[in-house]
Length: 182
Image (cartoon, rainbow, N blue to C red; front, side):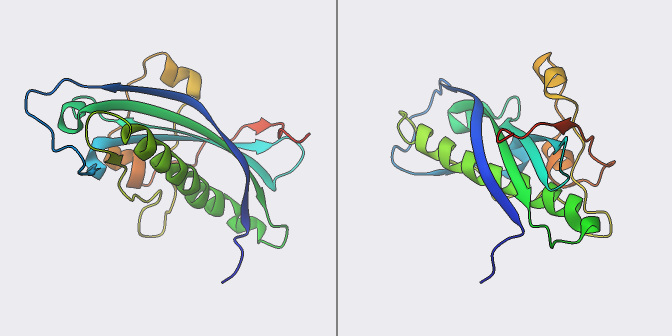
């Protein structure tokens, strides 16, 4: 086994909202609910460090699509920000693809565990986010470019999960930021 050229230095949960949704039928308490990929929304933002192209910040916002909450007895939305370093020996032309595919995947796994843990303490079955991919098969393996987080907070309509998680889109918008260690 080899170490990844992308290192997650740290991450924080920046936003979490959670509530149970009234359901007329009795839930099977104790059984885990596997969420369908088409019921998940995810938006991703990328930023490059102002002083080093080998340091990146990636932000992800994950939730259930509108209307699907009743199928799972819960509604939730979780936002995470991760700070990453790239091995200096990694080819420069492959850095963006490495970050755009692997960074949101790492943050998504952390969100999966947090959602499962939180819903596991609720009155209904624990929720498990599905395995997803942040690229499309083929030549253009680029995740969707999402608007700045402020636009999402102002009520911007979210993309469908199929577009968000798998459709090839334009190159993600990059911003230069300071890494928390500097």
